[in-house]
Image (cartoon, rainbow over all chains, first blue to last red; front, side, top):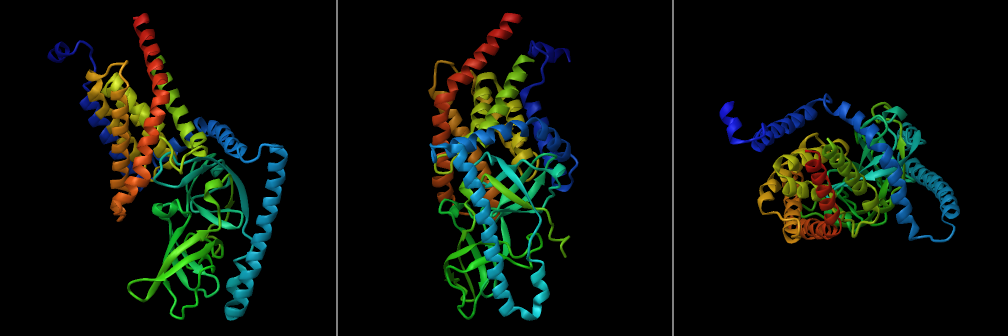
Length: 287
Length: 168
């Protein structure tokens, strides 16, 4: 003890030991949080009350700033009216989608009519986007509703008529949503006109062009063409069936000659996402 | 104590700016990394301990809100803060070249670690694409923002230092 005191005039622990301790702490946290919710839950709660209120305000400021360049005159009036109209459009698009889907369903799956019932109206809760991922690698965002408002992990998130993503993390007054354009996102979809299933996966390389990738589409009759609508499939275990994902823009045969893959243009404009709808119904529950 | 509180406030403000305002005014979808600037700057201005502390807190904040597992970003940021601490000896407040190089290098290291652990391990092999479209613009943008806010960080640090010596 005395010897160490001579070497440094202040009695501080050398940096390399602190480095080691913090490294071990981080690794331990990673392991614990990977297996349980033991550490993350209190932290989620604490952070929720310290950070989220500011984020809410600044998020509004950010949205205002980006909206300002677009409409200079009568900002408030126009945006209010716009929001109202948009809501109406969304409502109507959902209805059109529903009707369209019903038409296909009716002609094709008359025998499986029972399936059709669970497609219709899901309970939804509106939420505001208050923060987006800090880095440039992933595409997830924070919304201003959390477990206090009944939001749970794995709930589907929509914006207007299309699928946005899924809730992956919930705090008391905030929730993290991973969007379907995120590089780690992957879900099972279905071409509405033919009921063929495919895998929809986000890809960072396509994010700039505004596409998402689809693959493993088995389409022996070449019935699927670009412009066809893709919805979430019935076999997905987390996504509710029948939510619009987007429209096929490019399709080509894979090298194996069995499956097809290509690009989908999402139904949602991810660059201008300010409000979303959380479907307060879990896939497991609805079955 | 005053230092801890000031620094914590700076981290929170940096985080908030990065998740809200900067996302709205991003160029080509790329956002400068304020938290790396803070971590790196305090690392070479104040040494390893402070670099580690700021890196750890910044990383933890990102982990809580955006990480898939808790601790990954905390570890990466802390590591970067620690490495920057080695350059304290050759740091002079008047010189802007070293901070810019160090912050640029830190950002590159951060991006590279992210790529290796979060993308390469999932089989995304196009390093060339990611380098040109994500890492490079990220570094350029971050270094540009450094030019603007570095004076501010330096000022805060000098103010804290004068406050500390004044009291001692």
